[in-house]
Image 1: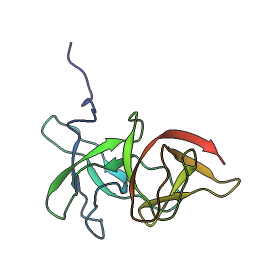
Image 2 (image 1 turned 30 degrees about the vertical axis):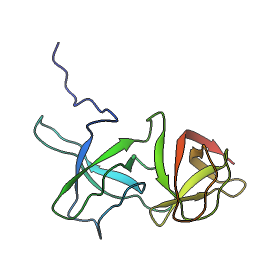
Image 3 (image 1 turned 45 degrees about the vertical axis):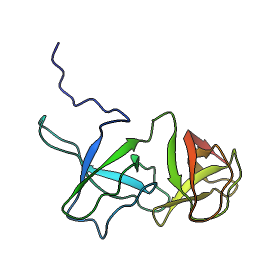
Image 4 (image 1 turned 180 degrees about the horizontal axis):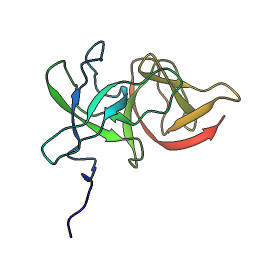
Length: 132
């Protein structure tokens, strides 16, 4: 049965950098989808996620200007995220400068760290839309 949408999977989610993007996106960075494809041959257009907002996904392969890369949707069972500060397993994470940092009390987190790490580390995180 034909569908009206393009399925997303953790394996083949290719995206292109939107022209409004200010720079390339590297592995583990938070991204926002600017436009979803309307045809089967189009790719989603993405850019870096704004601070404190809910990311649409996490970069799997670097996405350079004029090139394509892969991303994992935010609802993926687990994603490798790049940290902007130290975290412990179980900490809720929010976006800051494209990286993920620990939420302060009362802030909303969109991912939960599955392991400890420090700034610049790639760690595994799971979806979690909770207030710290």
